[in-house]
Amino acid sequence: MKFNTKTIHGGQKPDPAYGAVMPPIYQTTTYVQTAPGEHKGYAYSRSHNPTRSALENALASIENGNFGLAFGSGLAAIDAILKLLKSGDEVISTNDLYGGTYRLFTKIFEGFGIKFHFVGMENVSNIENYVNANTKLIWVETPTNPMLNIIDIKAAAGIAKKHDILLAVDNTFATPYLQQPLDLGADIVMHSATKYLGGHSDVVMGALVVKDKDIADKLYFIQNASGAICGPQDSFLVLRGIKTLHVRMQRHCENGKAIATYLAKHSKVENVYWPGFENHPNHDIAKTQMRDFGGMVSFTTKGNNYDEAIKLVGKLKVFILAESLGGVESLAGHPASMTHASIPKEDREKTGVVDSLIRLSVGIEDATDLIADLEQALG
Image (cartoon, rainbow, N blue to C red; front, side, top):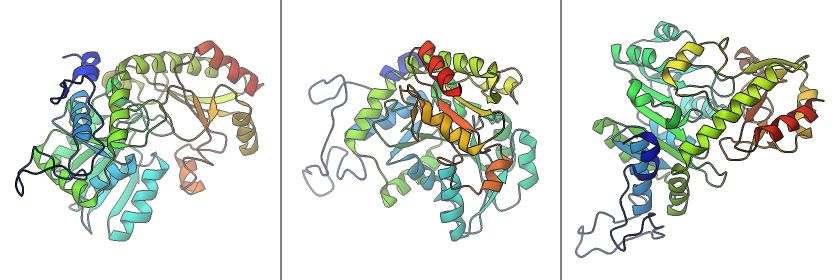
């Protein structure tokens, strides 16, 4: 089954009760048992819920995995991965990553005795310099947030396998439409399903997909024991979002290219970060491991002025100034004061998150209107 068909049918079947084509919202906490421990596979909705199960099956299908898990948020999904570790273990993470992930790593799990190394992974061989007997996890985002850096998943997987380390990939920006990390050797794929998988800015959710049953069983245990699950209504919304993922991503990619090309020619723009440019670092790897280059674009303005950047995003009218990304509407953000405010200024600037950096989540509107909006804001 090809990807565009999988988004609609993958892992899915009509509901057995009445043949409903779309999985119903099973808004229930508990289920009748014919005798103690005898039921139809569902006893309590923290452990299992039919709507969530339908979503988890769909997630596994579109990532070419065997097991899917849905959580209450992307950070809850990351939290579950880190609970595979114990005090004294070490993690090698990309140094250009979502601020919430950085906060979870440093403010929560460092306190439990887990050590994190934040490493530039554009040259993937750099990872090996930090591997030691305590290294248990490599954490990769690609494309990264917000610099759109590309990391070679297959090469990172080779290092992980060589040293018997887990490789987890945050695939939020790319989505399985553009890349499927499990096929490139990753052990765990993570999504903030809040973003492109849901696609309509109306649900907060996280997801994990794996192939290996042993890893899946450990994660299912953590999911149930820690309880950071999503509800049936949210599961329904993301299921519905996945069914149009392929057509939405196609338009996101088309519009992303148009916006990036426009910005690259603008006299007031200093740098444009978009993996589709031939001069983008690791563009050749992006071409190899991605089907297209996505709808995320970041740029800086000449002069690198913080106040001017704030003023610019405030002038936008079609682009909405807001956190998050991946919805049908175009969003603009100022990472230094929004998504990456939790990262110290010195650390974020080392990765390129300077004061004038603006991150665009390019939606599926008409590209002409989006360009006109940027034109009037840039002045």
